[in-house]
Length: 291
Image (cartoon, rainbow, N blue to C red; front, side, top):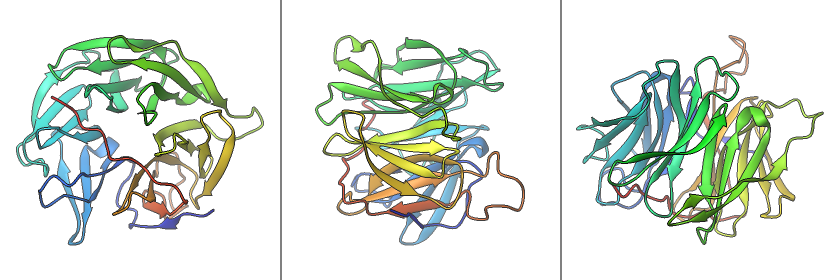
């Protein structure tokens, strides 16, 4: 299965695609993503592509707020907006105090909290954490000793959480409890040692509980059954594939982000574009942040 180019290569480091819900705004039912290391949120509507700066060098990911507006995780904290277009985006919480560490990726849990993963700029082994930001803006550490914390999503019934630490070259699955949060992880799958890819990056879970994972350095997205069995592969014409999410009117399109990061100048002209494919699966509406 091959993905087709959906946008121009508008980003240096496209990440975190999300299909915006029908919130009654001008951005309802649109595709949004971040240009992570340029601190921008991009939005594709019928009128074209717009972008909003987040007021800093990093836009790690964004989610809708349950009461309307948007939440954007930035380099070191959380910013909130009542306007989905981010015209009134303001810092709400500072979380990381080490300038050598930044946020990288995350998602909203079944309880409405944000799970926010970090990484060190030097990518030092074990220097990252996974934090939970509650709707009350309280922060707790839920996992330590990570290196590049990446995609996280939950099973349709909310009892399992899937998470990537990219250099570990494996996707883990953990029990999830509304009261106690993440349980102990086990390996869902690991890349073969002969595979030249860097590792699993962003991921999403479809309505049947299958896990779709962007393989950074591998020119592909892999679909795994809950057992870990490989079910589908989506091929891309660029090397560094960063994340994926379902969207479209029927949530049956898989939108895939890519990056020019670590790509030799002048090669792979499509790198930084968003790609799409209809893989015969249906996704689920994005979970909002309850804060």
